[in-house]
Image 1 (tube, rainbow, N blue to C red):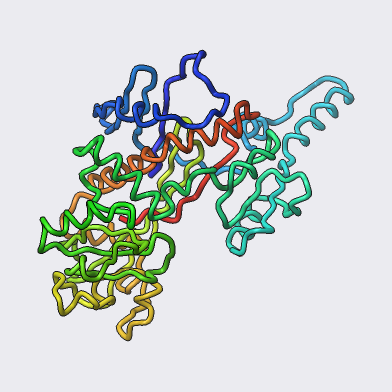
Image 2: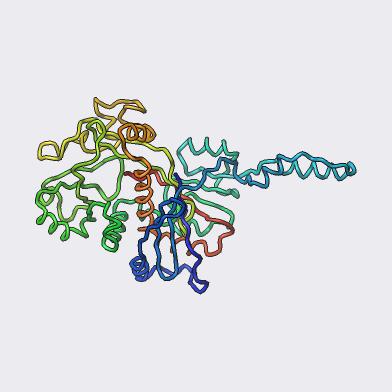
Length: 395
C-alpha cells in the first residue's frame, strides 16, 4: 500500500547550494502544523509552514512494467502498420516499430552486494551486471553511503541509498530524532515510547527512573542487530551504568497478543525521493512471534528472552520454534491480516495507522536527508538519484 508524498514548489529564491544545516532546521520543523483532511474519502496528513505543504496520502496504483517502458511504447507496439505507400516508406515505418520493440538495456553494479536475490531480480528485469569501473545505471551496495561517494555519480546514475538515511536506521540516531519530534509534537508522536540515548541522557533517565519506580525498561546497544545485547530490567539504576552506550526505552507491558503470544510486524518500505518524500509501503512482510506465552514483566521472567524478544535470531534457538507460514513463529503479514479480519478487527484502519507511523518517522530525518541530497545533487538530470529499501520498520 504505497503512500504518495507531494510538496509544493519552493520559492525560487530559496538556497540549494548545499550549505550545512543551521539551527533553522529545528525552527522549520517547529513551525509545521499537523492537519488532517478528507479528499475523496482518503485520509491525508498535511504538514504546513509558510512556504511548503507536504501531504501524505493514500496508495498510488501499482504498475507492473519493464524499466523504460511507457504508455506510448505500449500503444505503439499494439498498432498494426497499415500503409499503402511505397515499399521504402513502409520499410522505414517497420524499422521504427522494431526499434521501439527492442527493450532498453540497463546496467547494474552489484560488486558490493552479497544478496543473490538482488542479482536474480536484476536479471529478471533485463539488467546486465557490470563492474564498478564501467558506466552503470544502478549501483547496489549493502552498506550505507557518504556524501563523498554519491557526489561522484554522473547525472543519469542511481544508487540504492540516501546519504543520511542512517538518521533513522541507527538506534541512537533514531532515538534522538524521534525524541525531538515528541517534544515538538507530543500529540502526533504519542505512539513513540519514551527513550534515552546513554550516556548523554543519563541524568534525565535517572530522574525518570526515580519518579517512575515500577516501570520496566528495555535496553539495547546503540549499534547492533539480531537481538544481541538486549535485556529487560525492572531495576534500571542498578543494571545500567552511567557510562554505558545504550538506547533505553520504556517497555510496553501490555502488547497486543495473538493466541497469547507477543509478536511484531516487519514492514518493508521503499523511498524513491526525499525532497519531496515519495514513499511506498509493501503490501506484505513478516510477522515475528515469541515461542513462550506472554506474561507481564516481573523480576522472575524479565530474563526470559523467548517470552519478551521477537528477534528471529533469538527465537530460532528455542525448542518450541515452529516453521510454518500460517501458524509458525515466523509468518507472512497476509496471514496476520486474515486472522485480524476473522476476529473482527479493522485492518484498513490498522494499515492507515501504520502508514502514519512510517511517514512521521521519515519526517523526523527530513532536514538531514534534504540537506545531504541537495548538497550532492543540486541539478540532477531527471528524478531522484537515490532510492532506499528500508528493511524494515518494526511495528
